[in-house]
Length: 397
Image (tube, rainbow, N blue to C red; front, side, top):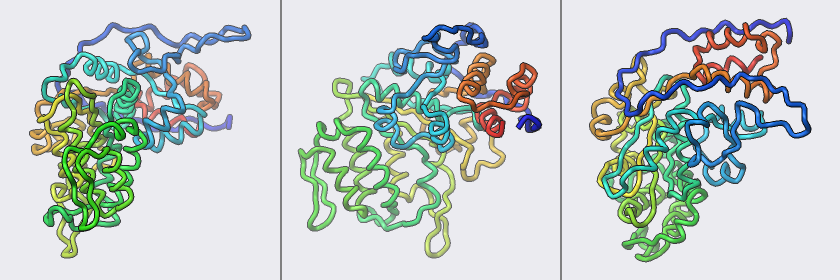
């Protein structure tokens, strides 16, 4: 292992930001590179960690530090939503830690002071590939979960527009197509995250699924969800009914509703699905996408929409920049406008140092040369301080 050299991978040219931002620059913070020197039985908290695990209590002084997501929160808040790479990292490191970063603090600060009697505000997270957009969204989801929001989390909208193993004509609207397996899986995860609310909230109308099956007015929303899980064929229509109920019942004096969508640009891009005549299925023809688009409209109050734009796995995004006006295309941009853009950039020097120290602490970095100042600077250069690239570079080391 000592004879290996660092991989020569370089990330060139960071794109300039042409999007507008609503946040002010903050003063530079102290470096977190101080080594651990305490030899007492109980050592102080490492300089790259914070013991504050509640995102609602994070402030500027926590920026650049890693906070721990308790195992019980992982089970209930993130039955889905975390990237595969991060899930592998949890198993490898034996813990789930997320860095507190400026975009997360910015978004949480907006949610704290928003006027929820006004139409819902849409926040769009964007940035270069690998900059940490999904984990920024997860940080916000965790905040809302800890502060008793009802959460509708779509962890990867592209799963709804590609690789669908089963498409069925909609029983509600023959012009649309249902995706029963995707809808049923999503409903199962929704139940895990929102169990208390599904028992408290009641349906405001009667829903007929078949000649023999229906959900009466005044029944718990949990029964609506159970219908979609038990009768997979009706799952797509159940999702639409659930969205309708939650929008209608979400008011400033009731509960807060978070709609979190990772890869929202999938709703206005191409699909990989074909009809029997080989013609392409449009996103608007899919029941799930149709209902999700309606949920993203700002014709309701009492909550927030937080979405990310992604190029990873995005269909038809070759040659496009990471900026909203390109990835959303005109139709998507017009649908979400007005929205608050929040940019996620590559690591600052403090954030890189914190992540570097965290990887050393977790034995993710063990190569002798990588532990030197020269090796650290080389890793910073090769990764261009991009979180995703830095993580992949450190894997073999």
